[in-house]
Amino acid sequence: MDIRRLAEDSPTGWFEQLYAEARQGRAEVPWDVPAASINLREFPLPYGEKRSALVVGCGPGRDAEHIAGLDYATTAFDISSTAIDLARSRHPDSPVDYRVADLLNPPPEWSGAFDLVLESNNVQALPAGLRAPAIAAIAGFVAPGGTLLVLAAAATDTPGEGPPWPLTRAEIDAFAAGGLVQESVEEIPAPQTRLVRRWRAVYRGRP
Ligand SMILES: C[S@@+](CC[C@H](N)C(=O)[O-])C[C@H]1O[C@@H](n2cnc3c(N)ncnc32)[C@H](O)[C@@H]1O
Image (cartoon, rainbow, N blue to C red; front, side, top):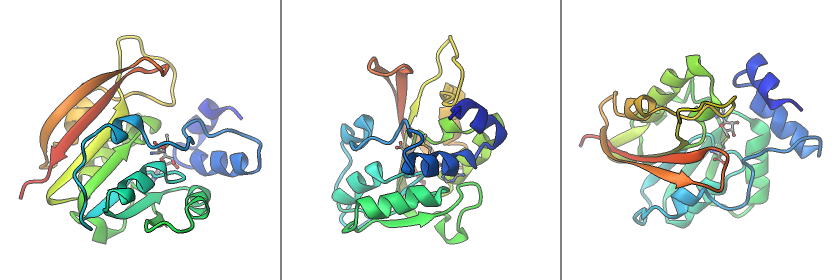
């Protein structure tokens, strides 16, 4: 399966095709690994104490399970119904509410509704024309006083061929454009991956 060609032909539809083919043993999903993202695991998130969390583009659920394990009442969504089936079947006793939903047309009741929002590795998988609306939609999920955590590959001076297409500093700053306050931005070396550097950025919703 040629991921690059699939992504060109169908910028959001290719994910379902990839998950479905992988389920039949005919492809591999490169990001489908058991452990939660390292820059999530190493981030000192406070315990949720049942506050709400939303995990964007959750795939088979690795990061959602981590956040639910920190006692957040967690909703996690993906555009791919196969990814959501996998998440539910791999975590049968999970408290996570796994949903099929489209980031670019989300349920209206999610607007400003979550105390914690995690965006990890999703915007970087979208082509140029979809990134600004995706960033605005993600920022729009954060409740007043809530937190947005963004994990992403960081663009370098030598762009490679995507997907993924690493995020520029301007794109990282754009998460704050809709009224969130950018609290911190780290650029973390990632020598174990071909993308070399990663962003970890934190934003707060105004009270
Ligand atoms: C590169 S994967 C990252 C998955 C996961 N966040 C992780 O780090 O393991 C991108 C994910 O975003 C999902 N996705 C892509 N477009 C989406 C959209 N418009 N709405 C919701 N999910 C989407 C894909 O199905 C895929 O699971």
